[in-house]
Amino acid sequence: MIELFYYPGNANLAPHFILEEMGVPYKLRLLDREKNEHKGEAYLKINPSGRVPAARDGDLSIFETAAICLHICDKYPDKGLAPKFGTPERSKFYSWLMYLTNTVQTEAIMWWYSERYTTDPAGVPAVKAAAEQRLAEMFGLIDKEIAKQGPYFLGKDFGVLDCYLLMVARFARQTTKPPRDFPHLSKYFENLLKRPAILRAFEQEGLKAPFI
Image (cartoon, rainbow, N blue to C red; front, side, top):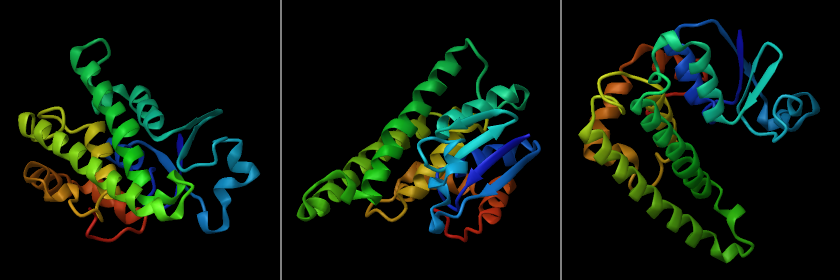
């Protein structure tokens, strides 16, 4: 059984959505970030980076959100939340997953924690503004992709990319041009937020609407 170590609203949301959608047995393990539990010796044995989330599957520890998502998909391939291995669709899935985690999520972190990206406190507003502009460009690109595909990221079937995009959209919800303001993404998110599994995951983490 997979154990997902989480803190409400953190990058654990995507794998949490996936596990709920699959309906497979799993356990949530709350980390008290206020007490720096994610930096404690016990957790560092699971995730040496001391970041949230991490997962444990028997004796195996997995960290980094995208890696956890892929592990879940590989463990339960019959659930159909990712395209089959060796297909063009699988390659497209990899491309967009890497874009969401390496590019969009990284930019959202820069927006939230702009002070980490400069040694000059006076430069923090400029770092934040630049990150916000880049996020708008990224979600503009994704908006065009959703317009071509629909109703889900890869077309007719709900999957991992939808879970991941919903998570990173939440991370950008307080920017001046949030993802929900893009025309195609607006309808897309409205559709996702009707899914019972998505709503259950939000509820289990104690998160209230509006979610994005």
